[in-house]
Length: 224
Ligand code: C5J
Image (cartoon, rainbow, N blue to C red; front, side, top):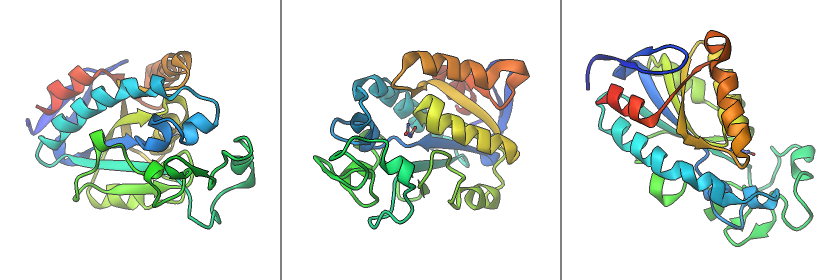
């Protein structure tokens, strides 16, 4: 990989150096991407989200092959005793399908359960940090910022689900903390295709108000 490269992003290119760049893969968990999990419990069709799997896999391979580039994953979920679960979040799902209830993949959105884990297609390697988060943003109540600062990370390449919820919240948090963010279009997905499209428009409007947007191909070209 080149020591310095440029990602052809919108609304303007982003210069990156491998050693100060991280790929952040947000919440690619069975609970969102497979039937019987948290995503489906809220009334969503999980098949829509699955379009992001192949693009995420492509990104992951390219970033893993780039020396010095950090790969980091996140998982949304709660403690088995649900002591970190706000009541309003519990009450969002219908009775019997709430967080902590038993589903076909174990207790819904609970750490340590099969449904909470990353899908096998994108499973983290042993050296890749995986950050467990109770909220939508990956910085809230986690050590993600410590991990990134200790490595001198300046730029985040962000993918995962869902575009307008956990990806958006994380990118907003990261932007305020001084990290430049590039959101990868096809490697993100939403249960609502319109929210994906408008969500990305929001990121890159006004000169890149809290980030930039790029295609998988343009990121792969830059990290090669
Ligand atoms: C949601 C997420 N949508 N990972 N979580 O509840 O975006």
